[in-house]
Image 1 (cartoon, one colour):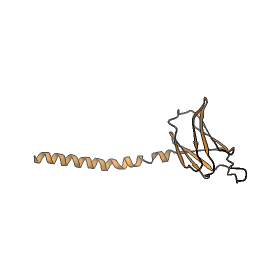
Image 2 (tube, rainbow, N blue to C red):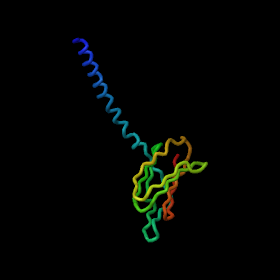
Image 3 (cartoon, rainbow, N blue to C red):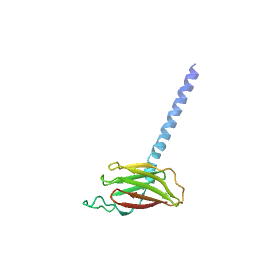
Length: 132
């Protein structure tokens, strides 16, 4: 009986030591997506209403391979997000005004292929960028 109790205690201790050694490795992998985000340069004009000041590009978009991260300095515009390949639209979503920052899951895209990202608002503003 004493031998079985020692075996259980020994197994528990080995498990704890293993967990303590592996935990830093697991924790360091948690932020990998943050490090892999790359900004998508946008071009265009983002006007909001006729009387308002126009901010050239108040929106930032980042890509990590499966998600688009959209940040906006303005909460006045709805943002229509369209992702296109050479065949046409493959992803489309409307972000209501004030919803940003937003994370949009678009899935894995084909490596080496170029996709066009188009953002529009209800005032005629349009920004474009490429994901590759």
